[in-house]
Structure formats: C-alpha cells, structure tokens
Image 1 (cartoon, rainbow, N blue to C red):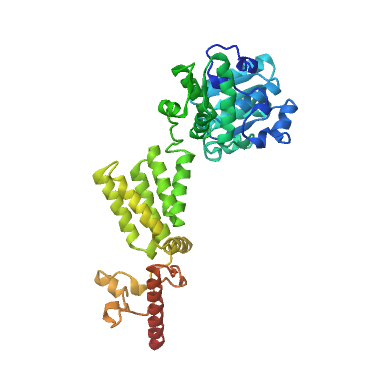
Image 2 (image 1 turned 90 degrees about the vertical axis):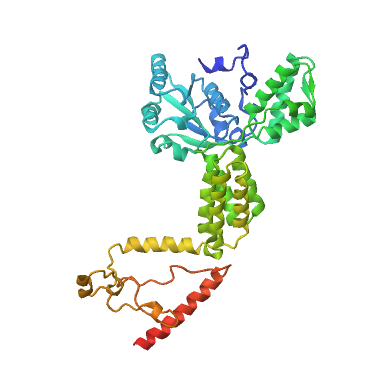
Length: 435
C-alpha cells in the first residue's frame, strides 16, 4: 500500500482519526518545533526529502501523521508495520519490494521498542544502503529500548502531548465533518472543552470518543452532562515496566524529599489509581526512609515497615491507607542523606582497600593457637571504661579515614552530632594520656 492510498478519503468504514489525518504540515496541531516554517522538519518536507528518525512520545500526538507527510513529500512508498506482530520476515518482505521496484521505501515501524536487539540489527544494513528510510514510533525512552547502532543512524524526535487548546481545534474540525455527514449532530462549547481536557493530550482518543457519540446519537446536540454520562474515561497512561512508571515513582520520591506532603500523596494516588502494585510502592517508601530521612528521624523506617505490614494484612483498598500515612510522615519528617552518603563513601573505601588486614587486636581469637598468634591481644574492652569510651585503632593500617558519617543539624542527627563530638573529645583525651 502506498502513501496516497493511506490518504484516500474514499476508504469506506475508516475510523474518523484516519479520515481526518492531516495531509500537510500546516494542518498538524501541536509539535510546533517540527511544524514551524523555520524548523528542520518543515525544510525537509519542503525539499521533498525523507530521513530516518525515531518519534518518541505518548499515544495520539501525530507520530503516524508526520511519517505519512514525510513519505508523501518525498514521493516514497509507505510501509506500515507494528513491532508487536511483525518481525524479521516482514521487514525483509518490504526490502524485497523496494529492491524489486528499484526505489527506497519509508518503513514506519510502530512500537519499535518491542523489537529485540537481533531484530533491530536486521534494520541496520538496509538503512545504511538507503533501501529503507526508517521512521520508528515509540512511547518508551529510546535510549533504554533501542541499541546504539540504530540510534546512531536515526534522529530522535521527542513529541509532546497536545494541549487542551490544540485538542479543541481538532474537535472543531471533526465536528464540521461529522455535522455535514449527520444533520443535527454537535456538542456544546462546555462539552468540547471538557472532552479536550479529559482526553489527556491524545488526539486519536478524542476523535474515537466523538465517533462513539455519533453511534449513540447521530442527530443529537450533546450537552456536557450527556457527554459525561456517556464518556468512557481514558485509562491512565501507565506501564509497570515503562517510562511513565518510573516518572511517577520519581515524582513521588522527589516530593517526599522536598517535604511536600500534598504533592506526595497526589503522586501516590496517581500510581495506585493507575494500577501500580502497592507492595512495590511500599518497598520504595522503605528505601526513601533510609535514603532521604535517614537518622534525622529513626522512626521513619519503622513507619514504612509497618505500612508494608498493614497492606500485607488488609490488602486493597484498606491496606493502602497505611501507604498514605507513611508518605505523609516521610514528607514531613526532617531530612538527612548523611547515612546514605556514608554508605557510598564506605563502599568506595572498601573497594579501594579490599585486602587491608584487620588490625591484630580486633581479630577473633576463639582458639588457643589464635591467641598464641596474638589475635585479640591489646584489645580494649569498652565496657570496662567508666565512660564506655576507648582510644584504639579501628581502621586497617594505612586506611585511617574519619568523617564517613557526617550528621546534619536536623532532627535526631543533631543529637548524634553532639555524641560524635563528645566521643572524639574523650578519645582525644585518652589518646594523649596513653602516650
């Protein structure tokens, strides 16, 4: 099928989104960095050229449309494959057609992130020799899902969700077409505004929703209340293994770190509403308690562990209340990452000195032979000191390092800092007296 067939309005039964697909770049709503007259993409289209690229963005923002426009401008046959169902054989079928015709094909590969490394590698020689111009579409971060060899041959283009004003324009165009085809059909201004907002930036979804309204009442002028009553709300954009999953948990974590309890509970609710596994969230909260609250509030860890336990006992939805309580507690608790920083510093020191011997006075001496070898000799038992403090070497020889843990002046860590200073003072006094 060539690109002109794809743009043919005469196709009967085609979805509204297909029939109203823009034919020219100036008809595209959204993506001004590509559609603007001075943009590189607009120049490419004007010059009748096509270039391999990866369109990365949420559903319904124009990835297929832009690929169609580029193919039409370059007068290039358009082959559409989905990586969900296609594989190496289907790609090679397109290559055979291109070679048989002696011309390049634009291969639009939807959901390209579904191709594994071996399947992606199949594309490389055909892109290199010019048999294929590849336009990949993905909702996933291509730097994680596509290999470097493919990325080096394609320009990655980030597409944003279409804003509510843009969706209103799209709805307006659709209503002109649908109104001409169906006498009396229309939507109130309030219904148009609400529909554009509720579609969450997805043009295809809003057009499919208009078709559903046509099916339900092709001669009705729909009010806001009627549209809302009929509306099938767009499912939250969510994939437990996808970028949006990690974006949401990142937002939750950062709002907790920034002590914004209101925003933190909002992001928590977003994740749960979208279908996130509550125990995954509970595990992340435990990590936040140690990484961002730390010893500024030692109770934070217990709170998160109990929230996890509550969910295990009660399940959803009652058990989720404990997660909300824990998030609020973490957000409002004093913050310190000093223990986290100490962990990283200690691990770095351990890697730098992996074989440094344990000082002989700190070694274990469970047998007579070990005692004869001097293990444990000279060790000072802290409980024998009136103040419980001793001055002796604890690091290996040549690895003396102080200040791995440096407490803040916030929360309970202020007391810990005072304790450290007192210990250092006592050890210093005893060290001088031992000389």
